[in-house]
Image 1 (spheres, rainbow, N blue to C red):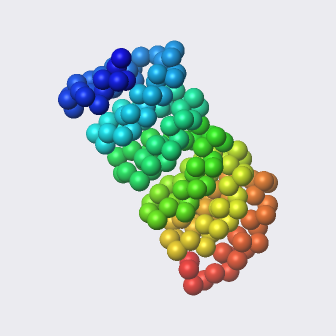
Image 2: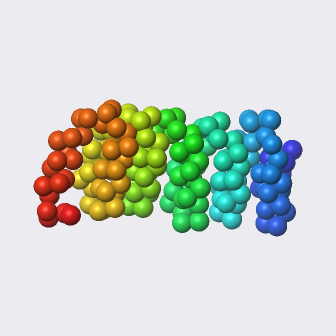
Length: 171
């Protein structure tokens, strides 16, 4: 009932309802995920939505697309990164796809998140290698760091990393 009513509530009522839901243990994860998806559509509710996703942890996987979108917003990107890190390997395909976003901050935050996921992000190595030649310095730097955190599974990145070290033009 609460999920269906959220869009119709006034801002204060919706904020209170969200905070109440986020504070309670969530035995019904399907309902919590529906709440999470709805909340992420309301800009003023992104912070409480991130708190709810944090409680849900890896079971928040159905909310991955919304969490990747939250990487674009300065108010929520930190919580989105942390939640995606907790989701782990399941979030990797969406994060690898975000490396192609037009917004450099989304690309940078996606590379950062892949690095925080570490070894389970190994399937994103080809996209991270490509990110080493990104126009934005922060994206390139985070891509190199992410490859290092992935470890031995990123061995195919060594030639590209060596080229980066020799590239004095792009820093």
